[in-house]
Image (cartoon, rainbow, N blue to C red):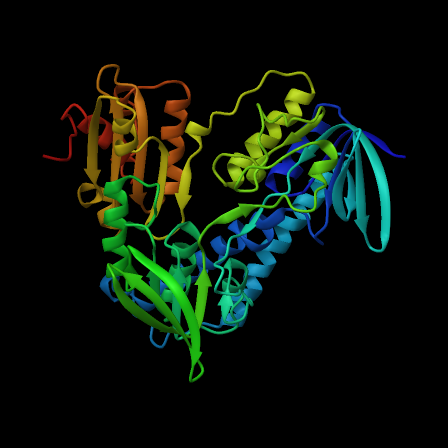
Length: 463
């Protein structure tokens, strides 16, 4: 029986990063993966392919609407097959990169489904074969899968998850997106840019739930201006097929609404993927959402750890990677801690939506006295120059200590801008620290500095 210092079940961002870091630290590691490729949902059917399509469709949109800039391109068309081909090449390049990293680090890849047997053993079944391996430490990193609705069966043809929506062979004439979170908004924008009539149906009062209230409200106005139809406070209750069209039935404020669609995207969240892992064999239970309870990544079973989407916390690839690094270092005897309060969240629409820390409402709900600074992109030189004035930056600080509590950005490049806010908050920085940080001019990131200055009514380019 092969024996390792650690066996990681699942080779997504949490799992393969954990194995690589462990190998860097001199540990003998193995990765168990049932899918053909390493990288998990994020690389293969999530983050990476969606960003490839977002970028391609943004180029198409700019080419088709360049008259304002004096750029006139006649009869701009899109080749969906070519679009998908490029997406595939991007994914394939990164797959090869992950595979090379794992191979060069001497990590063993075990193809198949992993199952805990107890007593530090894992059974791996795949390709008609079953083998058992042993490890002092077993790391569960099996990720998550899309959640569904009980009355809507996903067939990945007409009623799809994000997987199907990333692989349409033609632009749907009418697309209804159930769920106005990151996945729904991103993929809704992809197909809307290509000409689909997109309607987003959201059960909650706002889209981009979890974002600051000011940002969510502004985002809704911006996306409606871009052509998306958005219905919030709307509960989907049924779906029929009539005359070749999908007819979605919903309720809003006690009244029935119907939506006709050629395709329906269900994006109502994700659920931990913990079925079939043999958790009972190790005495491990799951919570009501299928997640594994942990204490600093340790499960109830000795030597068994859990990371990424299978435990509580943001279901984000970068959070999962931090979990993976932390566990590898803890196994190697290093003291580590991951602060989930400092994990940034991003929605890659245009403009992008990014945030870190507390929203204004969440801070007040905690009983904190806060002060707030805001800055509109309407007053930012770079935003005006590149026709990207839809957006704002909001900084929330403790009224007594000036310590940064949260930052929210809706702007072109918000995913990059938020990193400097995270850095300041990581070291306990204040709004004044952020406001006195020199930002290059002209950049949209100057709006972050201005919003921090606005807390003390000291923003230079705003009244």
